[in-house]
Length: 211
Image 1 (cartoon, rainbow, N blue to C red):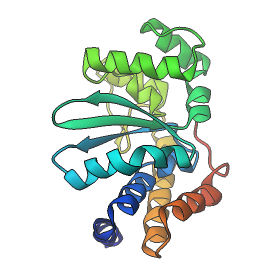
Image 2: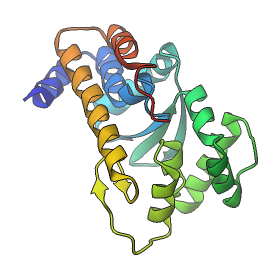
Image 3: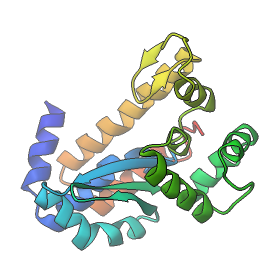
């Protein structure tokens, strides 16, 4: 019921508050410090969503100290990746993640700008390259198993397909759900988008870390 109430309330908002609240919900796991990046697809036939992004979304992302890159912009949709620079840098610089990216043609110890622009180039070339999962904070072993189409059994399917350490994944999924639920409940209490972002950060950031 809360999720339905959230969407009803969201759709009742004027364009600026609408897109800001939509974004806070979708990046709540980044704000909470448990995920380095998310992707969002903005379909151009959903005029309120797409036009609100063009008018107000870009500046709001900067206001809450996040970055974004357009991975694809075609006649039907805009696909963006929103990320927190320090979290993404930390995750991509883990040794095994570096080795994985280098084998795919990424430069060693590059700046975040170089990493995300290389991802964008590969996104255009391969439609949706498998290493995107790494940028989104998915464990490297699960990214590799999914990428290599191993005959390994999928142990759990939630925020990603889990092939290894399902117990840890269950804990992560449960906490992801808690953050999402908190975001919905706090929004329904009437908090503005900026207050909502601050509330998520103060309630979760630095308390639960997975990356």
